[in-house]
Amino acid sequence: MGNVAIAFIYSSIDLSNYLQTKHRARIEHKRIQSIIPRYLSRLNHSDIDLTTLNLNGLGVDCSIIRLLSTPLLSGETRVQELYLERNRIGSEGATCIARLLCKDGHLKIVSLAHNPIGSLGAMALASSLEQNRSLDRLDLSYCDIDDLGVQKLAQSLKHNTTLKYLKIEGNPISSDGVYSLFKCIYDTSDGIHSIWDCNHTIRGFHGQHPMYSPSFPETNANKLLVKKLTEILATCNRRYYSALLSKSSRKIAASRKILRYYFKDEKFEYISCLEETEEKLVPNVIGWLSRYGDVGIVYEVVRDMPWLVDHKRNRRKKDSDSGDVAMEGDIAMVSENVKEVESR
Image 1 (spheres, rainbow, N blue to C red):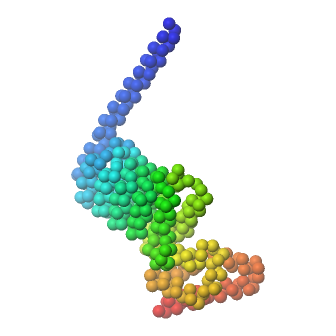
Image 2 (image 1 turned 135 degrees about the vertical axis):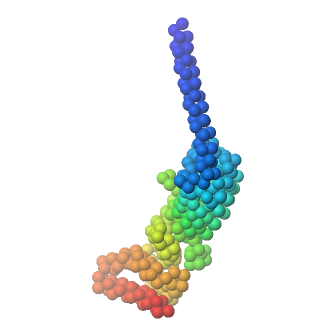
Image 3 (image 1 turned 180 degrees about the vertical axis):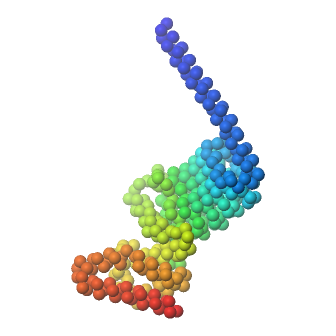
């Protein structure tokens, strides 16, 4: 009899919890149902005070995206941040957002994290990035994007100069996909020309979580690839970024990559490579940079190259006198070339 009573009490508690949970879910559903129409009403009335749309976890699908797109495409709204995380947006919904990005000039942040947009949706968004000139951050983490989608995104970034963060962590990407991101920022297939055509403004491809996944395991080869990717972003794209001087910053980042390519990847090989080919190499590099950039960029790049400092320290340790003379000769040679470009 006691066991029956205890079972009855537990069943009553379970039923009570169930009813309370169902009641809270009903209230939450009503709240959700009222949020989207409220946003739509403000958008349709061209409310310029509405700058952020946070629709995370509200069950947004393609039909709601279409309703939102109509007032946003009118150009009379000022929405800058669009959060659509953890919804039911597939490739079709991503295509609607891509059309929006092609025409809208106000959106700065778009987050589609944890939506099954797949590679088709990523390809549609990639095409829009080639035309968009306002977006600053795009979050596509955990969106079921494979290598094909990432490769298309990487190609489109070579035609985009405004996007700074593209988060793609948590997707089934292999080393091929990660390598396409690396070539997006450091492509040496056609020498300095392909390097110059790379993206020099993107600053990161993931947030707090690393890029490793079951499809991209933490092997030595993958670690080396991630290390090179991170190094190029840190020493070139992020180092010279300036919101006020973005065009000049891009040129400086590109110049550093070109010098890195010519002077090898190991900093201790820079000077030996320079000394062996100084008569042919330096005038050509500086001349090429001056045609596509300006003398100020050449000066800043040469001045900030870490190998100059490292080489100077090493030579001083061996022979301070001869080291100083050699370094002064290197710097003087570069300065003469800069003066020659200025005179032209």
